[in-house]
Figure 1 (cartoon, rainbow, N blue to C red):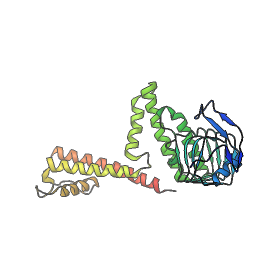
Figure 2: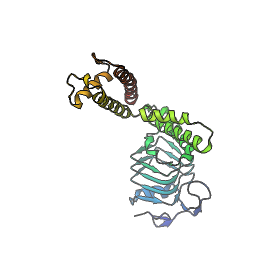
Figure 3: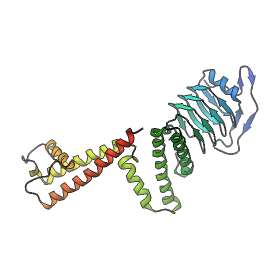
Figure 4: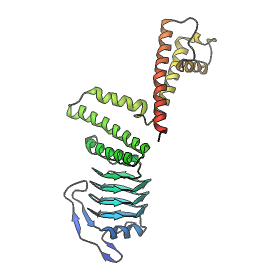
Length: 293
């Protein structure tokens, strides 16, 4: 059930306004003040739609389980407000300021938090990853995650600041792709290098990526040893698991084949060993980064 945005407690609110710019251009919204917003949130109907809270100010309030849709909160100020399990769909947060606010299990979809400021807030930057979806909006996305990173760093939350940095680098890669494919002002290699780092380590935030590549490499080399160098295992008819174990030992620098070493076998072992060193170093760095405060 939607809350009627033009009434609360039996009386009408302020006038309606039609937006001429921004995310909700062309929409007619009902202008609410802080009292209207608080009363609507307390009525427990669960939805607040087609509302303009432009340049509004709300303090010391908990908004729980509210689905905001087609709302304009541009240039507003929220101070010590807790957003708990709220959903924001097509909400304009342009130059909105959040001071000591807390976001818990919230979702932002097709929103526009352009130049929004987060001052000493508790927030997971991943909640904002669906605000922008088109590569052409890279500038807004970079500003959003840069502001989130800056605000979280100033609040001493290094863990979440690195999450914001991860999303910042994802959008930086998308920017490079846009400049390469659309504007043709950048080359292929800057984007490709960023893509490789993302695939390998998730910019240091996804150790599971590195672990997956380690398993893929060990398994692939085990199959190569089984097909072309079956004699590395004492019994030439050994199971694939025996070759996998041999590959694992080479990967971890625990031992090379001691007999009948051909040039091909030596190249395979040295390559696996070298890649193993790189991947192990990346894994240690990623896990250390992930677990650090």
